[in-house]
Image (tube, rainbow, N blue to C red; front, side, top):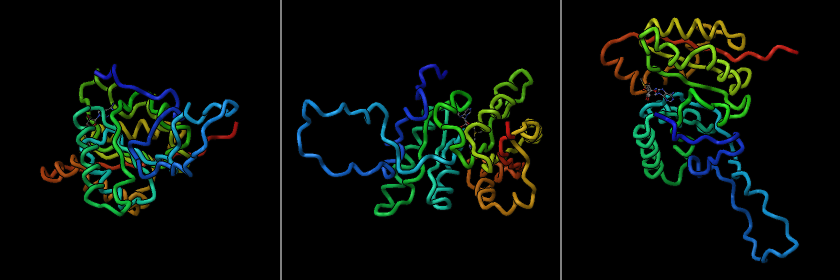
Length: 243
Ligand code: SAM
């Protein structure tokens, strides 16, 4: 159950400082003078301080964080966020990131990844403003085989509109699964959405993130061990049509 999950009221209310401490702006010069009666109220504290960069890449249902850890050095100037609903798994990823940062002191390595416990089927637009994201990964989502469970799938007509909202035109949704039926489902639902077009196989194969997604997530390794198949599809966020 996720009824005790907390969400920011708007993306401006989200405090990312504990997730990406290296990207918190410098505190600035220390002010030694005392506030006077005429000084203005500190309105800056109504909203948490913005980071020097925004999150641009999300891993939806990141599991144990293999993709984040592999993408961190591949996209060194980008903030990547894993979102995971299971508390213990999200905590595991947070500890994993903290350990990697400690093992790599004096470098920026792994400062650009974070993991948030969240239900991505709810309130994605509370975390990200319109057009904030450049990439969203959906790797080996739970298949929910039973027909009556299809509404629990992470790709659906409603959710695709949320992905379209948070992705900027030109942004990419990456999908991979070992369940062929789910692959067709995701292709069908994303292709049917007016904000998305499928990316050609050539362009797909040329994208270095595809190889990483194919080999580095924990689930992809499991499928590899079991000699299972992997079905991949990428979709580009299109420009909104003029009014
Ligand atoms: N992407 C990872 C990988 O490839 O190794 C994990 C795949 S695992 C089969 C699916 C993950 O999605 C699980 O860790 C599950 O807890 C998470 N998940 C399922 N529904 C979710 C939701 N609504 N919000 C966030 N995470 C979710």
